[in-house]
Length: 123
Image (tube, rainbow, N blue to C red; front, side, top):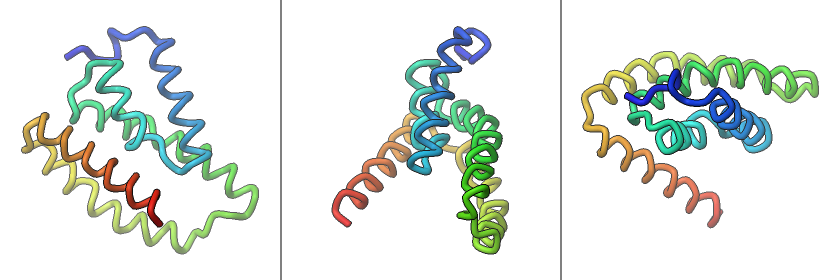
């Protein structure tokens, strides 16, 4: 593993800055940006990148939610309902990821990003 402890802190800060900026602006960050950057720039395996990203995304999401909350744009009822589903789905997804070959996981993740991009471009 070429983990983050071997990566220059400035590079990790840059990854966090880009992810935070685009997360706040576009609603993406951890999954859509941070994971690919951690794989390519930090040399992490797909599962490791997911784990590091999830550890970082909680405070990033909280900071963005506070900003949106100050503008009275957070719908707590909807957010709570999404949270309930996510609490059930996230451990299941992490368990499945632990059983999938890293290359297949990376390709599936890339396919999801491409499919999402196409959907957003045509709708």
